[in-house]
Amino acid sequence: MLTDYFFNIVLLFVISLYIMYFLSPLILTTFQLAYAVYMATPVDVAKSVYTVEST
Image (cartoon, rainbow, N blue to C red; front, side, top):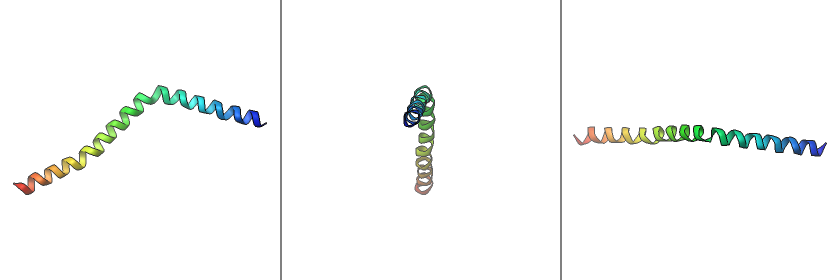
């Protein structure tokens, strides 16, 4: 009973590792894109506000 439970956990862990390994480029690019958008938006807003106030 306990060995079956442990085996299921290990199997799920291995499957999730395989999924993460195959999807990691897609996940990384998605995170990078979202992070770039998230980081660029306040900077662009601040730049536009700064240029408007300075002119």
